[in-house]
Amino acid sequence: MSVTRLDEKLKDANIPIVGVSGVQGDVRVWFHPSATVQQKVDAAAIVASFDWTPRRLKGPLALIAEIASLTTADRNKLLAATAADFLRRVPRAAIRLGINIEGDEQDI
Image 1: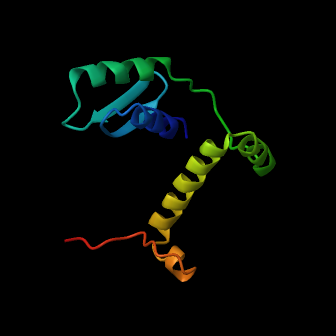
Image 2: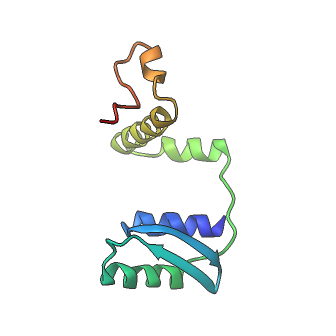
Image 3: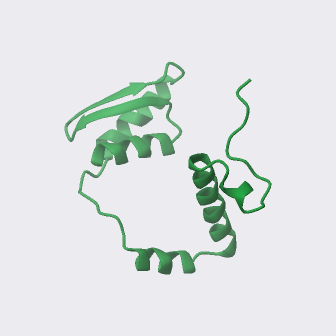
């Protein structure tokens, strides 16, 4: 799971990668051809400082408490991102509820 978190951390930093593999001390990053030298340097710094400590998912009650403490704007952003992710997985869910949003589009 740690290498998955590293992959996400690199993507969160807007570093164009194809993927990551390996373990602590032996990591390979596959860069997209568009990656600049600076992005590769930044990626190396992220890999070098990455915390490999195992992590676990928080429980639902802990997450609900954190969400409750967010500003309204941040809660709305989280809700929109969650809904968008859901609609990408279940494209017609909103339509079934009478909401005119589809999660897919024509591939022309």
